[in-house]
Image (tube, rainbow, N blue to C red; front, side, top):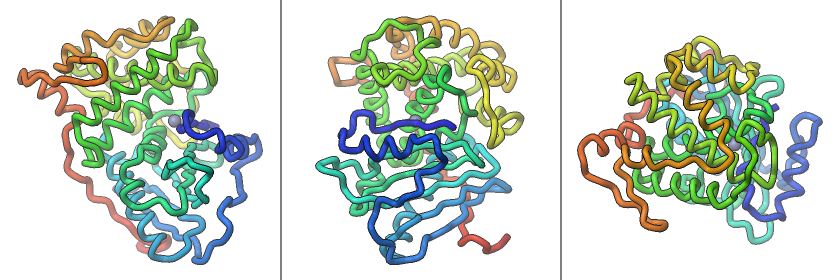
Length: 340
Ligand SMILES: [Zn+2]
């Protein structure tokens, strides 16, 4: 079971919910919302033979169910900007509406990806979250990015959370849910949080440590940015392309892998040894990685919390190759049972 905690900085009031969600018994089955006035809404999004089933468990009305389905389809389109296909043959997203907890303003206070009996993403969505608030939130796209990798266990948590944290910004920028420069700023803000977290364990020994959460997420994201840039520079291909090839050859709903075996599989799928080398360097790090060379290639200068973007053509091209807008992939949607 891969459970990924997102709002680690969010209100402690959510911890009760979190603990319920993390209980070893499968799926926290108790809806926290009090009443469901409409039947659950179920839709299947298809690209080729691959399907993403989206269930709104407890919509108060059909109109609200429609709004949530539209939002999730937009997040799915963002996921598809990686390689124009869903990473898995079959996956499910469950949206559960919950009341606002205390003062926590998060429109999606909790999300997790479960790998039991298939792969499912569970999203707790605040009952009164507006469409605009949901579109501005990163949680759903983060969780969908977890579907790019197999279950990696505690040892590979930094790779899993790093991949989802990198792509939550990349995918949203490409889909127009986030401005490209803002996406770089958010990535950089994450790196600053990770750097500020300190810590001295090697990345490949950091495991599941609550105290190291920010380092796990953002040193992990720094690894994938470094890996993406190294692939582009040394192999003339992107991380998207390598993940696509891996998804076709090797990724199944029940895939599990040790961290190094996953990296080796990505290298066989097109990384050609580049990823193993970048992995070895990052895995041994006891501090936050320096991103100086990466930022120089990207033409990004930092001034405190502000970023300056160079207009040098190679840097502009590289930034656009990662964050630039992508055309939407044709996505077929149907109510469950239609057209099957
Ligand atoms: Zn996560």
